[in-house]
View 1 (cartoon, one colour):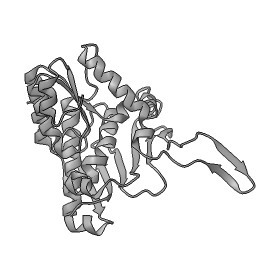
View 2: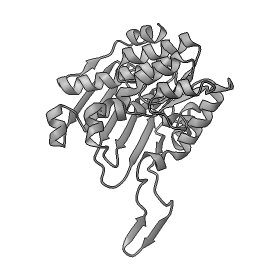
View 3: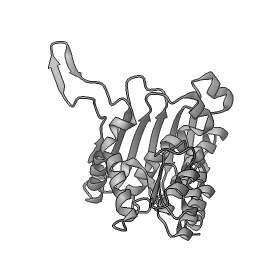
Length: 294
């Protein structure tokens, strides 16, 4: 059945045990709070909300209602990213000394979406922020520095950046760099490289439409990249759905905790503020722990 509003759906289908929120990020909070108030488990595409405080509030509401909030960062279930995570966890790189991530979107989302809250920090960077932190055994960044720009005149006028570089500094000396863009013309570009103290590395490479390479006198040839996120992360999304079903049935718990989600939000906001102000932002992670535990 189809319904005009989420509230109408919740009233009309009282037997439903869960709600999957798949709407623009700036609309997440209202939907999560409404679903929780009806006693439904909630799954939501990242970010949980557009602010640290609202994210904490949503987790608190779900906890009070006795339901789970499952934040779906697709790198947590993607085979390639999880293979990198396994390599790091096995100690095959020694101590991690540098990480570089690339997120170049394709196709560029509609202008209406970008103007309503589709900034590259909260909408794109949070994916890599969450995954990178999941590799580090609890170490948190102490400083964020970002530079951004608007390639589209309408976005520039509105103060919305569509291109950015972010650097995270960690107490251990680890440096993380991220490239973000809305404007890749050649396909959905998703890469990550981790380099270790023993000189070893592991990386996520781009997914191509057809996994075949041809070589001839004219050079090396291969198909283009995945068109966009539905085909690049199809397997990850299927795993997210399976996990949510298990959560509803009491067979599993969310991979992303309230602490994880709050940190991703806080770091993304620090990057945005750094880019707006042109200065490094020192992070008080004690505050994150306090909010996440509230």
